[in-house]
Image (cartoon, one colour):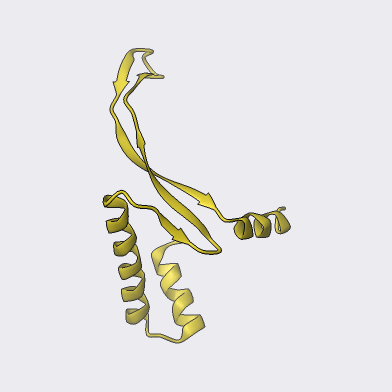
Length: 94
């Protein structure tokens, strides 16, 4: 699913114009992006939690050449689904 798909769904379900739906999506993603930059989590009740996690430097290996290298420290975003999402996924498991 893309941002355009989300805009289309909001347009169909709520009846907002596509421009208004696009603005809402952009505001939502910009707010989430800024929250992640500040190092804070985003919890969406009934959906899940996005956490910012700091990963330390570690040793790695280039799989193509086998050379050892240092993987630099970085921040990553992780997602943990809510129990409601997990249970609905299990009900619709193919």
